[in-house]
Length: 342
Image 1 (cartoon, rainbow, N blue to C red):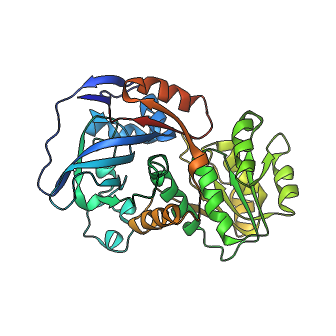
Image 2: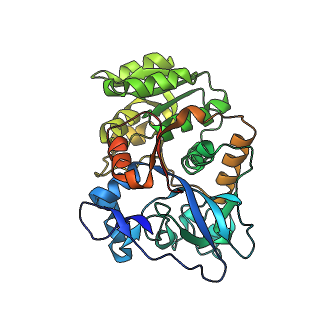
């Protein structure tokens, strides 16, 4: 079968690898991936960025962690049922897993989909059935395929500990940044803005089409953000993966404010301790999503309380995976999707 595989450490992927059809073990289902999203994580694995080099022990690995699939066969799952797959999954036994935070389990890294465990950029795949969540038939495929980044956005907003924030900013108008903004808007803040750079024109236009206020960060990015918010921010979500955005985010916080880091950075981050301590700022990381975040994400798209359809981008075939990666790298608007089923 055709698959996109990270075969060796170092830059590069095999976009047209031929692999044997996988056989499900006990408790697993055989799945036919329908749509798989391509995101910055996939690009980082392709380029072999530092935060992902610990995955060398698991190579070769099929990429693809944002998966909408159809059940081919399973012990508990019905053939033909559509499902999404928890991208990060723990041991299922520890306190973190039992409390719904399986993405923080010490064993989660070795079960990370499309990183340590074969993902969905293939014609077929297998996964434990308790790792699957059914998708209601009323949810369109292109929306269901966005549940993984949307669950990450739900998790990020839940991570913020600032009570009811008045002024919220989201740094980075990519798919996850816009999803975070849509979820954060449900908190009914007085001001919420999405921040991008001059090169983010199309993405910022999409944000405005979604009803979100935007601001372009330039040399005076901090002042522009404060002006747009009407004062210092209470909560800022850093979803760009930019070191500069991280630094500007810290500067734009008011006393007692919180910076929630959602984007993975390829370089070390520096925190100026003086201002950080004197202003009693909080710095939080938000990683992936737990089962409850996934369930809430599915509920929100099923009820259409949040409309993700404008965030679905171009669709490529599995045999066009290289083009899908290059489109994502170019910063196209919306989440790039790969249709794996023929």
